[in-house]
Length: 164
Image (cartoon, rainbow, N blue to C red; front, side):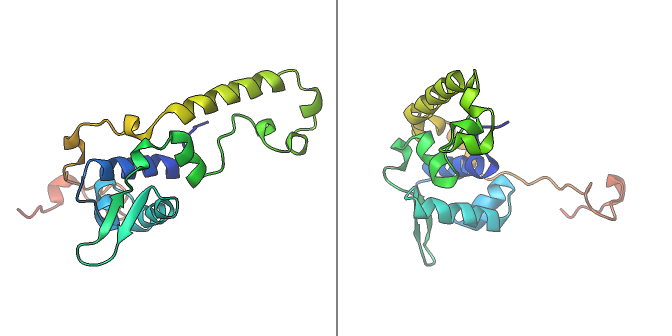
């Protein structure tokens, strides 16, 4: 079980990237930097725009920029904005009886609900800027390794001519 799904995980990476780059960035360069599809990056950026974590600007000098107050928002806000609210167990939802026939008589439901509240409280206290405290050189362009292992006609490395 992971607390952060893939979309939230990449959203954090994208927001951190924009936090450390005052000039912002476009979906294409962000996708290339993290090795994800441009469509997936654009989809996340669209959602981040709708939730006021980033702003977008069209045109030749356009792109995406971190919204002014986004860094001070909480990790819980980001998770809620991109995904359904974090739930430690299904019985922490609005209709526990629908997910578990034992929910009414469950001896651990209350302690799990208490733990869920405590985790949620921590997520609400973590500001995104705390997550963004990576060294700035982490966002310098880096070469993308060539992975031919998934190619249908993979050849030994000695046989691949590399242009210099």
